[in-house]
Length: 204
Image (cartoon, rainbow, N blue to C red; front, top):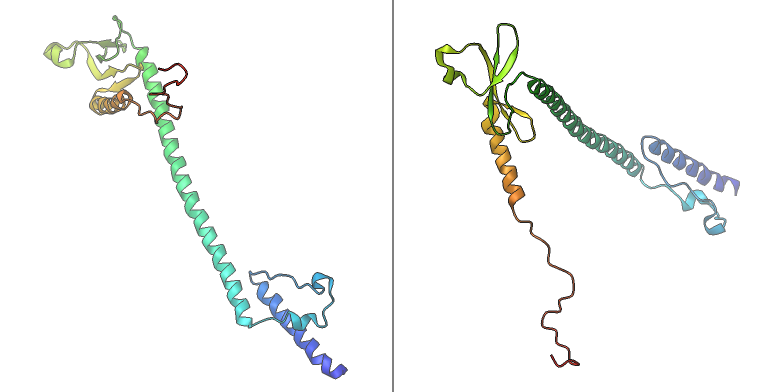
């Protein structure tokens, strides 16, 4: 009896070792339950006999492939986020540069009240002082008294737009104004509609 039981026990141990070996390569198998439902089985090794060892290898390969796909997917998403962060950093840098330029231009000497929507021309005297004028270099002609530095349009938000960007900026503002002027389509009312309601008591 002992000799008959011994081979079966040895075979069960060998199969379990093969299961653990395959699981260790990336997969995980459900733990064996020696007393399912509180009932002791005659031979847990025989009732939980492992199947084809190739199935365990395929399971381990599937788990490994899933890990590779998850890592690749996370890498792709992080790459997109990194590009967005870089773009936002570039936008933030430009916003700070424009704000510094606008502040400097508002401190330029000027003998008139600046009005939004007008273009002002920046000149520089021999002394180094910069000042705004409403006279363009073309209007001065050959009698232009000082060096011309550039032209800027004062926007209604009191920011300054360089002359070469005025057309593009005006186009953007026009698009925004069209969107703001469009009537807002309200959703249909969900309130009760009493139109046509007649009271039988009043006789109306």
